[in-house]
Image (tube, rainbow, N blue to C red):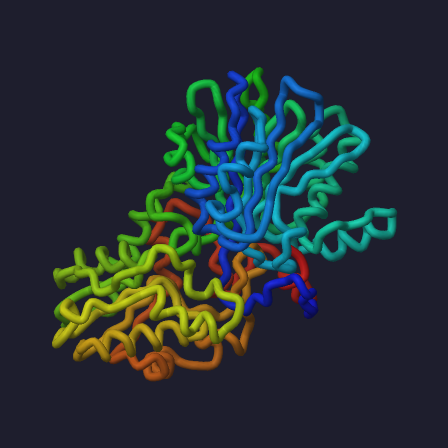
Length: 480
């Protein structure tokens, strides 16, 4: 189903889009948490560069009064000192977004705040629901009026409705989880509680942190580090945690044996200094490079990584092969990831703005270039061309993921079929198309080695083995 963009929407090109980032804090000493959420979101900026928002409340103030600000743009653009000064509270949640589905508008920015008969709820969501369209239609026929086009609002509505029939918000979350199907890591703020919930498959990460007398929920541990909080533990797939001044309560009744954690978190999405479900992202990428070196050895003078996610894999390749590791690219840190551009032509021309080659490093050398993925091939082609223009005699490309063959319905906006270069081309053909002297991808059967065999993961974008049956119609681009 195709949505036509409204006048105030940014037209987002289909491509490998990011997920979202969620962050929450409850300070029992009644310290203001707004600036802490700001820094937490800043550390999660890599997970979404389109919009952001913060919702806070004072647990000593009027019950249910929530102060909210959200807008399009990066965290440091949206939240000026003046904007932050207007937000006060000792409990709050924040969100950074990239629209894996749903229009790119201010209305669709999160957190969402809803007022209902039992009070106020604020919600931040990372993921995609598979049955959101069905649930939205069902709610619409019972009188629900939607303010957004994102599936997160469907979740918020179901929690609010369930709350009318049960004694607590956490029970309402549990009942809502029985109805929604798909991928979600949620942080919910009620007037006196901070609640975290993770879907039973555990597609996306969520963890708990602590600093003095404040407790945190975060997509990644790197955000806990940014606010000097101690990592306590991961929220388990299917678990609902409720944080109150009485402590942390856990409900495991929605947990299940089968897990499906997104393997692409370890390949690309997460920051290398994060740990998720007991696995170091950095070590996973080092291992990916080692696997590539064993699988696709080649005589060369230098191993280089395409910043940032290719760097650790390049180091792993170097460590395994004995070929020196070097820095061939200078990255402009003020430019977003290359595929996060409003239109295809802008994405392509942004490659040279984002990266420049150190000609002195590559001139006259045989280069092994490590990157995390190839989607359409346009970016890889331009980077290979840049290396050769700078004097590299050979460029051998190694990719720390298998070829993309299938769309993702769980929060990563991987385009479908004909838009994926690997869909209709062999590895050799792709190598020729991007101008590489040779090309090698990690074998999907070896992905488990990246996470030391300690993770039940989802690799459907590579293998087509979907842990939940995909929807009959393409939900991507119709929700959020």
